[in-house]
Image 1 (cartoon, rainbow, N blue to C red):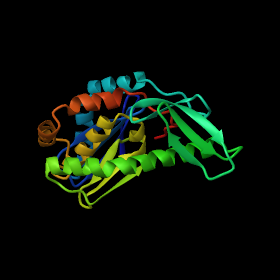
Image 2 (spheres, rainbow, N blue to C red; image 1 turned 180 degrees about the vertical axis):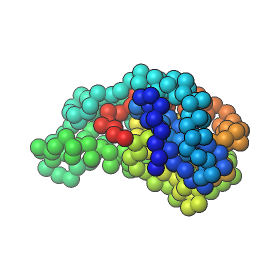
Image 3 (tube, helix red, strand yellow; image 1 turned 120 degrees about the vertical axis):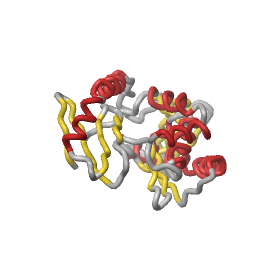
Length: 237
């Protein structure tokens, strides 16, 4: 992968078999990446990047000013989120298999005595994963019927720079585990977004028109998702 440097901004460049050039800015620190057609030389890509420099800086500033959650220690009375709602964590030490129970305003975390912070995190993350797995199939079916496409399979994983992705050839959708903490409509927005990629691979005007057709308020949902606080993660690029 090539790299372009414009002052203090480093831009990763990936050339592949596509028709148009695409510029993306990724949270949480505003990493910049360009996907360009194989036929395009690096000088032409640099000129394109320079033409977008003011927009790049604007997006990076927005990410920089976005709220961050403080590091979680997984202790009783600590705030945690599920589907956009704030819950207080209640840690219960038991000499039994770990489990998580969702109450009206609490998330009960049953763990063995002396379990480490990392172990507590792993248990809670696995609970988030299972809760997403319960909800995602119905949402995918809902939006498949609306859009008129069908995905073969979906998966959930931790993703550093994307809320979701779509392998159009395999018709496989990946969703970021972090979506379990966000409002349900944000999860729906990402599912719709990725399913529309089965019709249009690129983020071009046709893609935007399809989003407008099937989810008219998608920009509102995207703005909500991108303005919610990021979880504390030691991000590296």
